[in-house]
Length: 360
Image 1 (cartoon, rainbow, N blue to C red):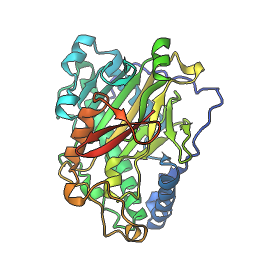
Image 2 (image 1 turned 120 degrees about the vertical axis):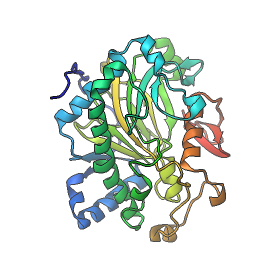
Image 3 (image 1 turned 45 degrees about the vertical axis):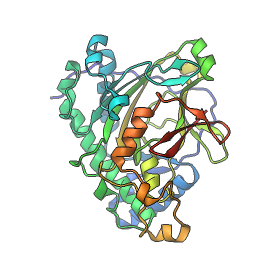
């Protein structure tokens, strides 16, 4: 019998007229056949070339199961006292690892304003670290949730990405071992409303435009509008909420491995529309990374890459491993001093000799 938990009440969807990105919807029921996967791989390839995000439906979790995960996701923020949170605070800057709490006021946003975001990160191996007392009765559920995301969502997606490159279906699956040494993790994240003074100083930006550092990010759609993507025409557009859908994007590691074929998606978080500003924004993620030892170099045997050309961010000999890249990105994010970028509207930092851009 499932452990009882307080129900998390989500905000009503906004009624404001927002300019939404036009994202395709991938129906996982089509993954059951080879022909279906080939069709979907073409749609995913086009989506990643044109927009960079897409939705997944029929991913194996019912609406009730998803609602239950959001109920559990709120526990680290509402049922753990500040003193106990400190005991499980992560040391991202020192370790380059996302495990435990990312407490508020850790990331610098702009003009002396720090974030009002709290996150709790759980390695897919939930036994790797100790967890707050209130969360412990739910660890078996979270382990099952991680397995579901890894085997029933991530692996089918990785097969679609491989087919898009005309590679064997399990090319990317083989470097995302569930039992391998890796930092693939679940993240629960809660954004709290900010003061008007902070909104003015940051231009309403809660998290600057950035790319994720892994291969694939799974975000469980929730109704508070705040996520935007940078469209190819240079405009920021909102992501529309779809009940029980996943919002999918790729990150730096996929760009390295695909020789620039799949570019990391630039996205940011801004102040929600007026009718949702008094609601906290709770998010549930699964961040996928290759095994730590994987060297981030292109799969040059890809016929698609051989036709289109390979875009490398560095020479293969200088390419980082996944461990090196995620430690560099994690330890620097929101804490390093950013320089004015060479591209208008950007700021830059250098990680392992490679330029990483942030977008205003």
